Image (tube, each protein chain N blue to C red):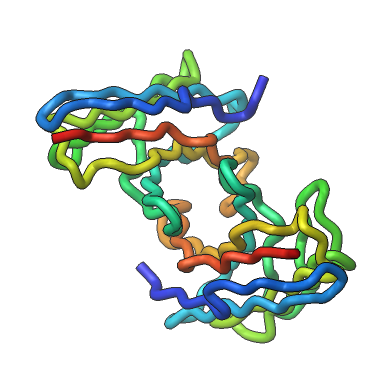
Length: 112
Length: 113
């Protein structure tokens, strides 16, 4: 089983749609969870951390289910500018601060 | 978040040569990392650049191929040695902020002919 698995997409949605991305991770010792956004030919940028209680930042909602080792990202009222690849990221656990494991990403394309 | 710059932003190199990539951060950071992103793939950690000691390499990466320097808390270099076309990739440095959040430099796009 891969360490972090995501549906590669692409997800092609119209403006204003709601879209959800899912991610599973294999290391039950992981303690930190993130969604990053990567635009074409750019570096990944942190979109949001994911907390156990779930968290929201504007149109973006992230949820974590530790029992199922599952993370989700919901984007409401999608904009053209949301088109990017969304990377699910977890740390490797065991107290390691830096070792992040990246999923391959889910590509989102928002159309007018 | 820290401001991170990398040099060069891109390069085209001949096989068998070496390239040194620089990473500069605008503030002192304890932990710096080097990642590789091969075409169509996600990021893979190469090594942790430790200040004052040897870098810590991940499985599949060795010091002879990817020597790393970390002379102070704001700067690091990664050298890609004896390059082959398989080394064509984007190389990114990153630093850790609060709560394990990592911030990336703009990357160095390397093409090996």
